Image (cartoon, rainbow, N blue to C red; front, side, top):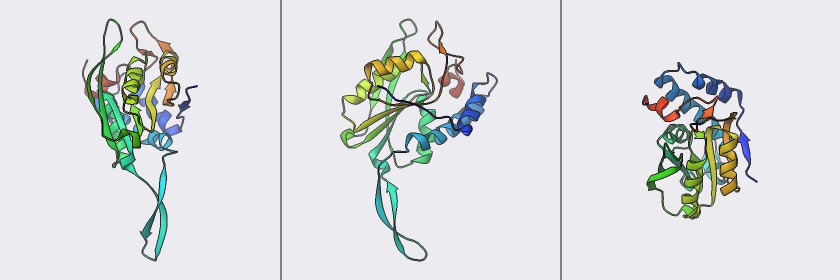
Length: 209
């Protein structure tokens, strides 16, 4: 059964509300997306593996815990995923990065792949897939399916907004992939957009239509 983790921290919810406003500027939307992504990273990476290291303080040598950022891979679903990617990299700058280029066919709403580039040795790495919206679920399903061909240690899916239809679609094909989201909205409209939603995240982030 797919786990759905709702990141309901007050700061995340506050900034998400500001992003929903239709009069939020491109600059404001982009900055808020960066901030929300940083905040969500704390919850998404709560169970990231750690190891002990030796560290010299100003007083003595002791041991502390550290993560190996090189074992972590953030995979951005282009193009809107880059906004979440930047925020997460601000928290874990040593992480590797992959990109999957997908666009949604406006007639069928099916995801079409146009780019795919990942770090090597994925079987030794934990993967976090990022995309602002889990709407129809087609892009998420296609991205995870391609990733599984490389056999990563684990996969998580992170988005700002999800809806019941998208969750069901991802669960049906990949029930082993947990979903992290800041909100689960009501439904999809006839055009495949999440409602009440926040519009097209990519257009709002880059100032395009």
